[in-house]
Amino acid sequence: MAIYVTSDLHGLPKNDFIALLKKAHFTNDDWLYILGDVIDRENDGGIELLSWIMMRDNMELILGEHESMLLSCAFVFDSGAQSAAKFTPEQMMHLKKYMANGGDVTLKALKELNETSPESVNDILDYLSEALPYEMVNAGGKDFLLVHAGLDNFDKSKKLGDYTAEELTTKSPDISQKYFDDIITVFGHTPTDFYGSEYDGKILKTETWIDIDVGVPDNSPVLLRLDDMKEFYL
Image (cartoon, rainbow, N blue to C red; front, side):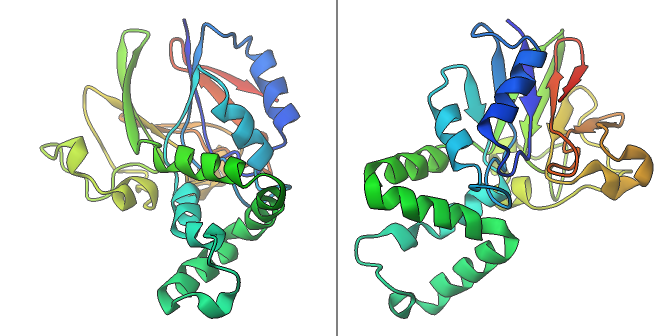
């Protein structure tokens, strides 16, 4: 069994993702961790892809910032929420923030799905609410911490369970940031070209962490096989 990671698919068409898996020779005996942000920004907001991932027994979604934002707007699908006039000021704040960050296409797709299959929308929201904010794995003889956006307010003595979801999903580390000496932290969230044009479309590796967000949709997503650190692109 090999362990793969990817992140920040942001509405990638399902067939494109399947093509990437085939290129990596990903099988049912392998395991894939998606480090958050499957949804929003492009096409149907990733709802078709997310629904497909949910049915896979060998794939796990780590909670991302965009999944958190969608969950904060779950009230939109409450049976009593028929119009914005019934939303509280706090709910409207969450909704405006989410739509400003690319959630408009996702909400549109979910609204259409809700008209024909509200149970499917409930299943999606339940799935996202159960997503863990981090995972620890061992591959190729090395320990890896998988998280969406790094570790805000990092302290080596701080237990992982003491980090808030916000600390794990929203803050980008400086390129000089060092995490654990004996654990490689792998995350997405920040397109690698943020750290310099020389990293555009490429994975960024430092001494203690790896950023695998290569900038979808401008660049194709990457699959990183942790066992041997081989990279796969469309």
